[in-house]
Amino acid sequence: MASLQTTDLVKHFGGLTVTDRVCLDIRPGELHAVIGPNGAGKTTLINQLSGELRSSGGAVRFDGQDVTGWAVHRRARAGLLRSYQITSVFEEFTVLENAALAARAARGHAWRFWRPLLADPTARAAAEEALRATGLEAHAGTPAGELAYGQRRQLELAMALAAQPRFLLLDEPMAGMSVQESAEVTRLLQGLKRRYTILLVEHDMDAVFALADRISVLVYGRLMFTGSPEEIREHPEVRAVYLGEELD
Amino acid sequence: MTDLLRPSRALLPLLFLLLACVPFAAAAAQQPFWTSFFARILIYAIAASALNLALGYGGLVSFGHALFLGVGAYAVALPAFHGIGSGWVHLLFCLAGGAAVALVIGAISLRTSGMAFIMITLAFAQMGYFLLVSLKFYGGDDGLPVAAPSRFGALDLGSAPVLYGVAWAVLLVLTWWMSRLRAAPFGMALRAARQNARRVDAMGLQSRRLQLAAFTLSGTACALAGALLANLNAFVSPSSMSWSVSGELIVMVVLGGIGTVAGPVMGALVFLGLEEGLKGVTEHWMALFGPLIVLMAMFGRRGIVGWIEALEQSRWPARAGAGRGRR
Picture 1 (cartoon, rainbow over the protein chains, first blue to last red):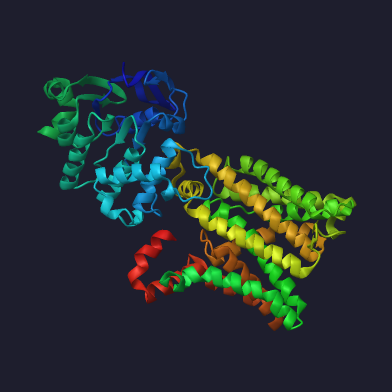
Picture 2: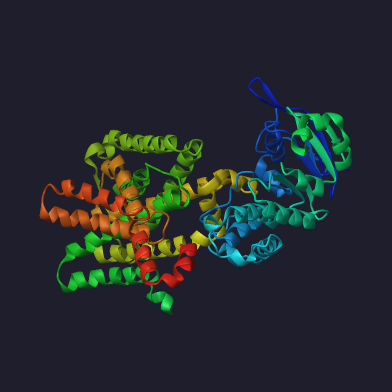
């Protein structure tokens, strides 16, 4: 059974069709990359999968359940977590507080009015583990607003991990990173592979080809082709539309 | 131990200690006015702290919190008018009324944000104001004397020192709770929603519900301040919920330090202290008061508590980073 499955997913903005009958089928434990030129509708697709955008048509199934009508918080509770392309960490909080809040939010509720968040052993343990995994443990006490750009991107990832998700939607985790930082995140994602099912939207082709089990190519909101990295490399149309600009 | 010597940590304990001495000093100096003046400060500090929960923690700019002061005040005056002097009944009306009104207004207002939220909370407060002005049976515009102060057994809020003690204790508990809440899951999620509500939802929480809960708690605590105010003045009138009072509460919070624990208390103290002091100097005190507030706002976005922390960081630079994270 598929972990995440979409059937004929559609999104219109006015007269513009941004997602056009997309059928995706992501297997448990798979790292599935979605690539495509700018404006192909990749972030819109992620927003539809996470529940932040209501779809105009079609269905989303997660672990066999129809989650099409579910709000974003409900999908997050079910284990479908996302990270953002534009870093959206809580700048006033420390790195540890950011991760602990994410951990608490996914597993518990926030209706606690007295005991500190950081005194919650489960949330704290999950947060510390996420910081270790992303190499941020040395910065646990630093306010997130004082982190360097690359570290913020890592915290973005740590917050998704702290929720101990069953499925990760990663929206360009390497956006704006240096070559070195990208390589580091690639190594990190390599370590996460198989433990989580991941849908990765990314522009960094080295990372995509190093990580992905399967790749889907999205062009003008439509899925053009899905296949293994080798098949994608060989596919003439894909080369023409997208890879040509990147590889030559 | 050295932590307690840091100004920002010592500020609140010292402040409460000094405030506890006021009735005794007033008695010794035979100046009963001091007790009632400082009781007013305590009561406005309660209201400002309550507003800080919505405004500072939640980022909900309510321009209608005077309405809750009014709800609390009339929750004392109306039963007293009908011959009910039991403080427990007053308290029940005050808490239930404050919570119900805040829940309804919050549920409607939170459908908007930004400027619209400010305007809609103001509109609700004005509706309450004009409703009470139109109730001629209860004094209308002229207000209503509180026929009987709230009595809790032997505790009679008609006596200024008793009222002072109760207001002091309420403020102490509220301030303590606000400091705990800041780092508790609810407070953290609420503060997170102010920074990025979309992210809070994506993590699996419902930011709107958290904000509604905060607005309701804030309004309820503010109503409590209103009930104390009615007892202090032995009089209620619609003017206690005029829009200018809502504005004053916002100024107190911002002046003291928005989103900080000590800020609203400091803000109420400085605001009402300045007002009283300048009134003694000239009858045109507002001409001095206005520019002073403008100057204070210009010299620090984090208010008085922000200045104290900045001063402290220049004196104790080694701990600067650690202090910032916990603020």
